[in-house]
Image (cartoon, rainbow, N blue to C red):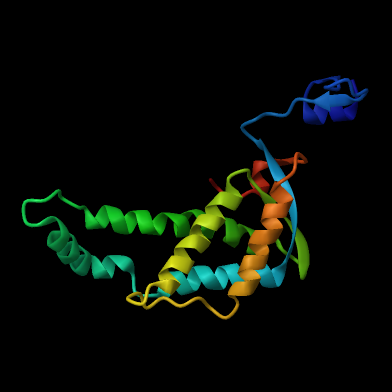
Length: 179
């Protein structure tokens, strides 16, 4: 038994006919991720997008307007629409994207670096960008995309390309944002 066996866990023959040694790592402390090369300016642009969306007049501030609009559509005896639930649903994409971007900002030490994306990270960031684009296109919404938006979109493109592969790495969960 070598030092790696003691550090990493039990070893066994490689999988899928590959002559090598594989190690079993505890699932509660390790996760499969996609390593993706990114530029700091792209991560910062996404952070600016998060800040701009958070600082724009909140959708729940328009809850009375939403409620009045729904009453006008459904009438007094129509189905009850929970505007608080609707506002919460609109916040979910930002709540999913914020910890990822914050973690990546903290981990980047240079202008170009590698971040770790879990399998659902791309979808979470795309959902947030779609929400921002919808808000930007809505004339009744005061939200505007920041000038740095093209760099945030470039981050999404890198993430799409980096996660559209079979290659994944195993890293300790201490290196990943909370899910």
